[in-house]
Image (cartoon, rainbow over all chains, first blue to last red; front, side, top):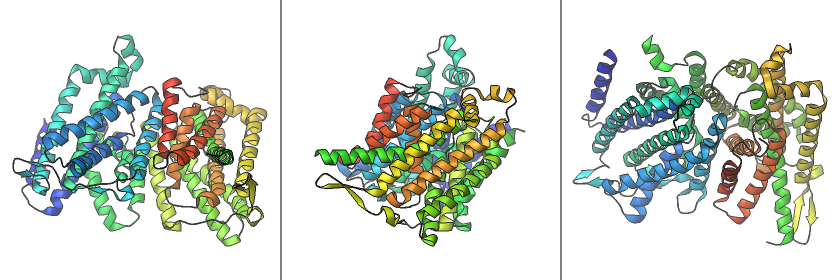
Length: 302
Length: 286
């Protein structure tokens, strides 16, 4: 009950930021909320299904680039058109990568997902016409019915709505039989299989759902910043979001969202304190693994 | 493509594959025996290359760099194993990935703090600074021949150690059943430390040998790490023979990809990996 009140209060606090009109805070908290969705979608895989995926950045980057491509090459600005296309692109990529990667179990899965992410990184970095390592500007950002998403306030509220919807959607999904099967797979895949569940199909479904949500994050990010670059595909991003999930507490949904908020602040203020703030993040990851394996959510529960 | 150009690319591919084997063999052995997936393995390659640059710039000799640098890196491997990796033996994959990912961030910052962000060239040793003609138009740098031969010698020595020595026997036993080895009264902790340190030294050696060929730059470790993962996936985890085959395959695919499909070269390697996953999901030797 207390947890639920805290969650609602948190969501309302985030909503209130939207009315501030402060350009810095709108972008900063908008980015933090995108991080929340990103981490929660990965938690579906890591925390609930037991799949450690490093491909999450690939779907994020792919949808972001798709939006840039649709806007720059085809002049598509209506989100009713671009959002479904970008999500479908991310879902299709997740289907192919997931299908291939799930052929390999356990530690192979981790390595294969990383390899495919890296492939996207090189492709988008090297391919002609995609802006190379500098990336691309999204020339015309989504707008329709008088709503212009290049306005930070508008983009911020869109992100807030996406966050709430994704949280409720994932919560609903995990409470449904589908979610219980995923948890069963994490606990003992063989037993689930012998009970007659086609476990690989369940894992692939979870992978595609998570990948599509990661694509949503890429779409929102490109809308908020109006800019995409290949670093979004980097394995550093995949590693960071994985770390966010563990920092917040895997398998709790709200934990990873909390972790994402915290990490956004750590990154921001870390950059001010020292130019070697990456070392800070590295030390933080190591400390969390060694001393806080259940994450912040674990602390809250105790 | 003329035949001599083709031959040159084959040689380059094999040489690149052999270097990759030095890195991937350590990765696959550490996973096979210690059960730890080490993301920081690429960092050892990167640190090796930077050490080679730093020592060679002061002594003027790459040989001196190797002779000083390899023991230094072996020692670093020992320290990292005791302080960090040893805490991971009973932990799940997520913890392993994240802790070693944290190490990568730390090593990258160490590199930035010590050597800066510039790209550095390393001179090839003067003895080897000539080219061997191959046909009319192409020639192969002698240093590449030397690198290939050195890698083959190291690989052969590794094979002897693993097949013929008591240590190698324990490594093989550990790869198939580490708990049983422990139950038989062998000090696995020592075995693990030595093996990890040897893997570190091999990766660093590869970085040192590669330094004159690729130059030394930030982020070089990650590229090699991902290629090594591909090698291990292709070859099958824990298998040295598989790593050898996989490394040659990746080296050749990468080299030919760069010649035949510039701009999309990197995709070739991953296409090969995808094909292996489709046909033999446990790897060629798995």
